[in-house]
Image (cartoon, rainbow over the protein chains, first blue to last red):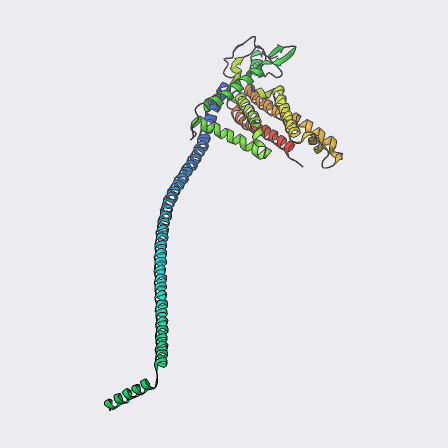
Length: 168
Length: 236
């Protein structure tokens, strides 16, 4: 014999519907479950927060490092510029020196050239002079030879002797 | 005498039949399933409606549940777990909420024309449906990954074991469905019988026991489903 309800309805029998037992069980389950669940969830949340925070910290650290690296880069760029400037300056100086030396060399070569020309001239003049002298001597000797006769010879010797006598 | 019968009434095998296209359906199971589905969907919608970077309250709980399910899927299935996590999660949540709703909600307050409300999983049809879905899932997983080579595992390690291996693949849904159905029905029956015998205090420990075992059953079903899918996916 089973009691069969006819149609939909509500059973208000407290004992039959097990409500009293459930009224004990439900609060117990809720309080126990709530305690464990909240502790688990709090732990989870804490973990997430701490990982977020550590990620944030790492981000900040990275930012700092980035900034430092950037400033270093700027410094390096400045140094590069300075080195470039210095290099240009050195190059300019080197070029100047080169031209100066070149001019000096040029001048020296010019001087040498002039000296050489002068020396050559002198040499030529000297040779010319000697030739001139020797030609004059030859001509004089020739003239003397052609015009020398006994009378003149005697006259010359006499004059020489007289000269010697006067000097004695 | 009549009063005594009234107190000790326990209904077994009574159903609130609906007829649809020539099929008879257990209406009370469907109603309860819809309620459970509503609960799960409502929980999901409420907890994920306002998402924040740092989870609070409901979102935290939902994330915890998702993580828990994902861990089950990961340990059972292995590397391809992401495809199957929703399936395992659906199984776990539906079974878990079903079992607990059956134990915690005083369904007997509502009277049906025939039969009574309870956990959807105390009806063999529900558990068989879930187990067959699992079966389809692992066949699909294995066939999709390995093609017809999937059936090669039947002759391993030796062809002599072929009948046993084939049988094993087709008895999995059987064991899954019977285990869940049997446990939940037994829980509810034990409580119902005790309530009819000693209405107060005595059933309380058994209700707790029922809560414990039904939670375990949900976990076992999800874990086994994951294990079967993982087995189908893993190459020998």
